[in-house]
Image (cartoon, rainbow, N blue to C red; front, side, top):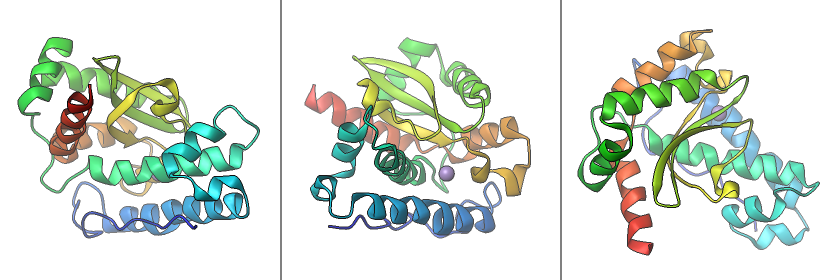
Length: 202
Ligand code: MN3
């Protein structure tokens, strides 16, 4: 079985002017596709090839199959990233997630500060996340390809802070890219759906 590159949930120019079609084009067509291609090479004729992406991540983590782990995690992370942004993004969460954010952080501005710290404080390449960890909302960052699932945390939304995600549009100004995400792109509907689905399981 081969892993397929999932479709983008919107057109490549849908996030303009905040993220250019050029950035999204390179990010999706070159970077995301390359992770999928390298993953397919790495799992060919191995037991991994029958597994879901999540199972590949779980089973390769902590082994010397770093090629499987890194590319499976990056494949998963990027699909999750596209859904964490929306042309109608920004604003505040609604419903049970909003109530939980208020309990944990006070308000959406305080959540934004925590997310901004995590995203700008991640040294080098990585990801900023809102996760559910044993029933508690947390803002965390991970390094390189690392995915919170391997730490027992459930991702609700993410932002890619690798330079390839923003350099064409923002150059070295990662903080401005993070602020733009929080103001204009963050997809609270997606995060809420993830939150509600986890609570329905709990
Ligand atoms: Mn990326």
